[in-house]
Image (tube, rainbow, N blue to C red; front, side):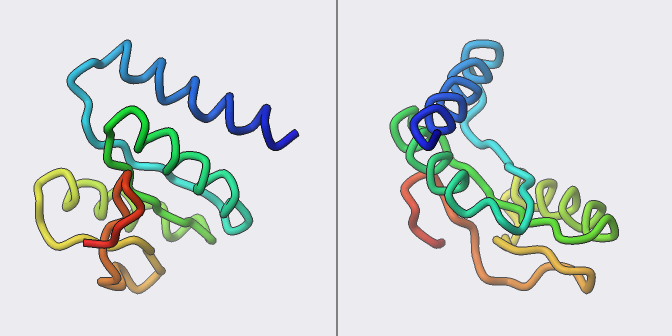
Length: 101
């Protein structure tokens, strides 16, 4: 099952880069229990030379904050890896290389 998930994640990212070739940064909204999928997404992004931002969403109220974080990330403003109901936590962005910046 893990291999299938990894292949699907990679294929989704490949399709996105084919449809929008200029896309270099991709935000990923994910649930609480998706750490394995996030690791697979990071691996796929590294191989495709794309940056990815992980936004873990635990409650519906966090969705608006997540969209705001994506906008800030896109504009090159201060970044956050996790979004809570109180807003951004300032931990930094995780990029395709897995490095925090």
